[in-house]
Amino acid sequence: MYLATNQTVLLPHEMNQIEQIFGEVLRERGLTRQCKSAEAIAKRLMDLYLSGVRESVALRYLAYLDEPVASRPWQNARPLVEEVSMLHISREKGAQISPDELDMLQRTFDRVCIWCSIPRYGKRADRLARHITDQFRKGLSDEAALFENAMWLEKNTDAARYRPDA
Image 1: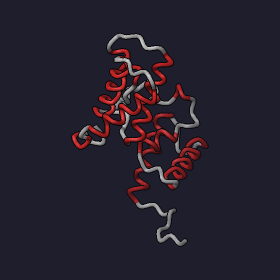
Image 2: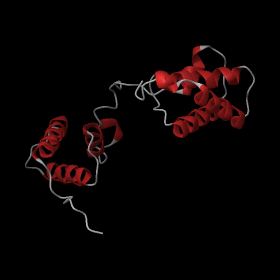
Image 3: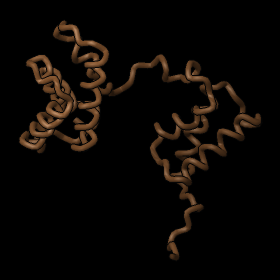
């Protein structure tokens, strides 16, 4: 099959984006453009971009994969948007939930998010996590039943009132 577009051609705005990310990564690491590490970072960024990674945040993150986790600049930073966690939701009302039960609640939450294409942040995810936790506290302790209950909620809730990124 013949592709009409050349996958190796980058437009000026794409090169500017890669250049900006490259400069930020070098500044954060305290590197100069002439060192071997800078060359490796540039190659990695180009390879990632040509393989289809276009988001600036993803490119910056993937540029750090060779670094030890503790030295990555965002490790201590608070995220702009926090994911909903069953751990945080379950601790709010004070009732003790065992680690095994918490794992089961998290699995159920993750499955529903995947099946319904729900981002794991925002109001919709928070409502879902609270619903699953509340149903568990009311006695619904079977994972399959919790999943079915949460799917029913998502199916019968007016999802149009929730923006996909909300």
